[in-house]
Length: 289
Image (tube, rainbow, N blue to C red; front, side, top):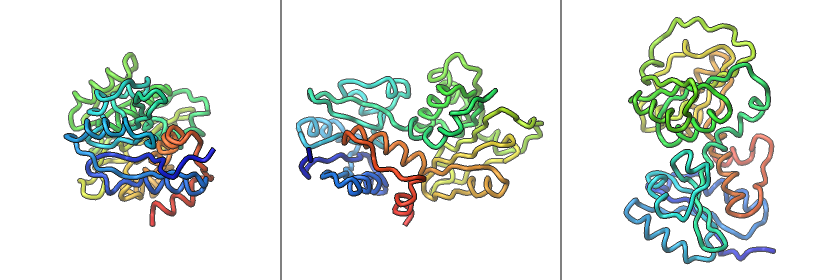
């Protein structure tokens, strides 16, 4: 049954004009020939309660994605959250149920893991991730990787905050907190050949993004065979990824996580999987024009 064209989902936040989510979702809707729309809506922190109240009464609203500064503030306005949102402590997707209740979830962790699935399908003697950043995205990544058996080194400007995140999201593991400055200075740590190990380095901070300070990172901290993953999307080819390729490391860019988390949300909004193609070639072309 084809839904009316008035059916819509959206992304909310402040600022919001720069969001690539409408390009992603509307591309998939067009390919499916599905009569719906995905929009942007600027919602400040002070208007969040009014927004939620209004959408509760809109039968055409299929839900929304939530960006800063509303990911945690919106939690108190919802009727419930699934285990993912509760574990991460933030909501980035809201879904209306048939009974009118609103459920919060978080798709960041699933989106982050998507390009890693071929590697995670293999058996490893040891998995370690060095994660740079302690913001909302980092929380989702910490939870997702701890759930996949990674030992985590979480680095931030405030190591105490990093320690608190680890104790909250990954209790019981032998994880470590470190100052971000630790990775800016060279190390002479003698890595072994890492046979049977899976090592990740993740920039989950805004450092290196347009308008932000550069990320200071020394590659002597990177074990052989590591994958370098930068979730920054502007620029897409960050200095960290450029340096990683020059040194022969595999790398994953920020569009991988962005598209991955959008795919999970799309299915929740519209009740069907998005029409993906191998490596999302056409969608990536649209997003990088």
